[in-house]
Length: 560
Image (cartoon, rainbow, N blue to C red; front, side, top):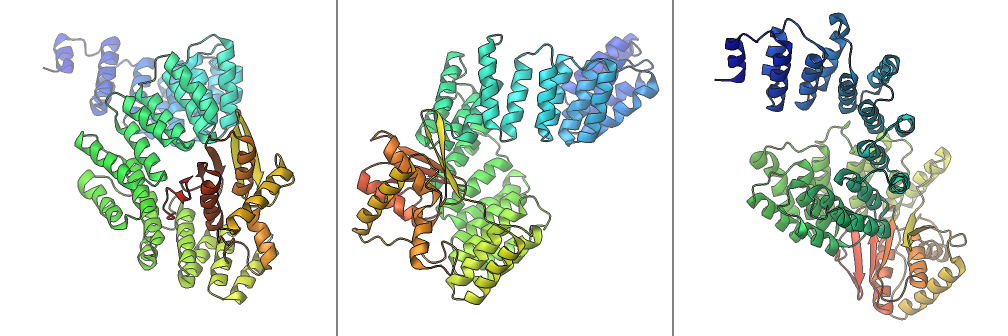
């Protein structure tokens, strides 16, 4: 006999306390329909009743229903309490409904709950998710009392909005306050900030704090550590962290699969995926993104297409635009451009990340000299974003690579007339917890600039003695003199960063360079040869993946 039946037979069906308890019980059991039935049968509902049912709707992924329920509260002469307002704000957060959130915030102030700990924490999360970071910080600063959850929320807001430095600064403030003990979620957020900035030193210090507080085998923290060490170029460390997690679940496995994919360890990534399936762990869409990236960066095209087809057939997961973007990239990298172009046309034009799809196809068609597909992809990109410099530059270079100088010059002229400029290449190196940034073509203002340029010139002489010829047409803007092209290539940001690293980082230590754009072919060859000459390991993390240079070769096997 169910609890509800017992209540009915006992004559307590109209008791508000008992009914509220039943609603909460049904919600915990994910039986919201039954909770709503009890709610409708109640003759006397209080604020707890309304708040419980609203919370239930949010738990089953129906935040709109929670907001509709909230709108009925005033008509029933119920006064919301702090938990009611926090529930409403959570609904707004799920929906990214900033307007309703602001109106509710005004009601909170009028009701006198603007300093309530639970309410303020919900507001911090809501504003942060909608990218209103300053609003989140204003709420945080207004709080009379804080706890570890409110600190964690504010640090997470900074991390999620790509403000890693602010997150780390606030964490230092948290530590200095000596008022609270960090929990797993706060430590995870701080580690994520280190990962976004590739700050290895700070990441290692935070890892020490993880161990000190006993979270070194925790799945949430472990997954963040895996991601952090991967993004800092220490995949071996990531693997060690993974092996320390007891019974790793979906998130640690997915982190490892994605990390291995970015290192070009495609078969290892697929091995992890199959191992996960054997353990009965169900993959999600992010896991399959990692699998498809692994196939793309390792040239396993047919295998990748099989996994794409298996998503719905075997696992009941409908592929979205991101999965098709991976498949287009995968086909394009191996020269199967006609198939890639056909697949790209199946993706709706208003899909998320549609620029990435056509950008990937444009890049691949340039590599293989397919001016027809490059033109179509470029035109699609310009339709989406009239001022997208990458489309103009790549189309121009593709035209030049096949000898169509007239079209190349026309595209360059259009760029100049419209005032469109390409995002400058920049790279950075971390040294003693300080980040040094280098910009393409700007050696004079970079750290130790004169010595860096002098060293690069010296290295150029040494690699030319080995038959290396710098530069390839199409890597830079067309129609420039050879000596000017050589100067441009010689001052790419990753080369400047490498020169600084060779001068400043002790011999024997690996030099790690982060770059905001894709590494060009010339720099890739340069790094390979130099790694052999100076007998040093270099790791470059570009916008797509990692390159680990050692003894004259790269882990990507020249496929990226």
